Image 1 (cartoon, one colour):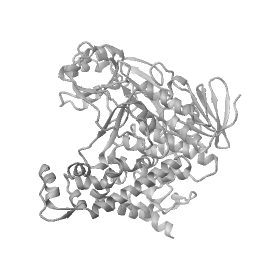
Image 2 (cartoon, one colour):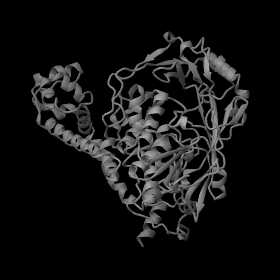
Image 3 (cartoon, helix red, strand yellow):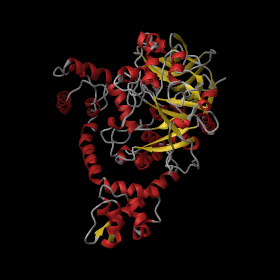
Image 4 (cartoon, one colour):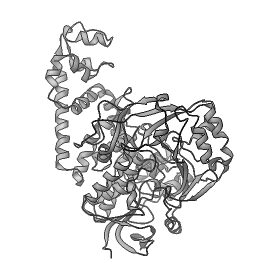
Amino acid sequence: MFPEYDIIVVGAGHAGCEAAASAANLGSKVLLITMNMQTIAQMSCNPAMGGIAKGQIVREIDALGGYSGIVTDLSMIQFRMLNRSKGPAMWSPRAQSDRMMFAARWREMLEKTPNVDFYQDMVKGLVIKDGRAVGVLTGLGHEIKSKAVVLTNGTFLNGIIHIGEKNFGGGRVAEKAATGITEQLVSLGFESDRLKTGTPPRIDGRSLDYSKMEEQPGDEEITGFSFSPVQRPTKQRSCWITYTNQKVHDILKTGFDRSPMFSGRIDGVGPRYCPSIEDKINRFAERDRHQLFIEPEGWDTVEIYVNGFSTSLPEETQYEALRIVPGFENVRIFRPGYAIEYDFFPPTQLTNTLETKLISGLFFAGQINGTTGYEEAACQGLMAGINAHQKVKGLAPVILKRSEAYIGVLVDDLINKGTQEPYRMFTSRAEFRTLLRQDNADLRLTPLSHKLGLASDERMSAVKEKESSVSKIKSLLKEIAFEPEEVNGYLLLLNSSPISEKQRAEKILLRPDVELKDMMAHIPKLQESLHSFSADSIEQAAIQVKYEVYIEKEKELVRRMSQLEDLEIPESFDFKKIQSLGNEAREKLTRIRPRTLGQASRISGINPSDVQILMVYMGR
């Protein structure tokens, strides 16, 4: 009934979809197995992509040939560039999506991708032969063979849903949990643990009074996520902001004795940076209100997502508390909020290709690795799909450095440090964030993607054209000079000191309050010189000019640190024989088996003196 596949991808969430697409586009024959064909690329929680650091990841996925950026642009109902008031390293795109359209577009793109087959069934086990993953066993009794397997099980592994004192098995509400895989992997020697995540109630938007809330419209300019020419919306839907209050908190507290989180019925650790509303009012008792974002679920639905009100309290407590929120006095609930507890496998059991150390040809991606968020899952799926393809075709692995991409930071963090709570990406996790901006993801990663065969010739040509345009703009900014009368009117508008003698455009642009687009709008001479260049190239040139000193400092730091990254540790290296290392260092180095000295230096518990000992020993 089934041919032998190059790669089987288990699970069709964000990680599974990107894994299937990347491996298939590279030329592998892929089978994507899901328990429900109707929930491919389902946005299980909030109907949004991007945000702080997450937006950078989506742009990196796009530059590497993934689909998430394109799908988001095609399905967005609102776009905002967050942190515009800060430096460009902090700018982060975020989009509200039409939930149903997002999933439909994803499925449509996958179905149009050659080499992707689909099958609806539950995978209950793996076929392991001589320490290699060579297929899967399904609930309907099929054994399907492959050369590699990518597990992207999300929250489905032995998932338990909690609402107040009620709990029942499930991977999402109204969808059954997946069983069998955890037990088999543990029997093979894998370590597993439990984590928790949650979701807010879904609300009937017709029952809300928006006049009591603050409107939050989208940006006038929709930059989007994809670097390819994608048709983006010409109109947007607003989101809204309201707040809890002390009365809301008092009502919520009445349900604490029936809360699965406080009663100990949930063993898994929840996300610290996206806590439930009961966790927030417990941990931040001094705050008398918390912000709630009222987010539409699509163009043509009245369903509303209450961002900031994740909860697993009893339904009646959720309802009574929401009725006190301004604008929610007549609220109707479509579905109560709930928490879900599920199995994950600490990611220190993986290599930097996301392949497991114990079983060859077996890759993990997404929440199975302890991460939270669509974006974190999608980028892992992309890298697992790429590396599964490289593995079965006998090609070199693809590993992104911390200095090359947020994706590189994420994978490096997971395999070296592991995680005790759901891992979420932040800009603060990246030590080279001035280099890893959302605006230059195409310049950083498209050459690699094109070399692999994921990015088209057209995408590569666009990057080369952008690089050329940016270079020309920077040259023009060095050449063009203004007389005082040409520029002082603009400077006075900014309350910036006027000039008294001729000055080059580049020097004026270096002032902190000056923006190149504004200069062009107020100085005809500059507008005339740069009018033929795209807005994207103009922004890129301005960033490179204004932040050149910081960019060069980070590049120098990368060059210094690369000395450690280039010192490879042989696979057979025996850390236990180095008696000068402490017991903890020897145990962790043996368990994680770092590929380079740079990777070794980032393992929790490994200190600089341990690295020095390794350098001396390997020098011998």
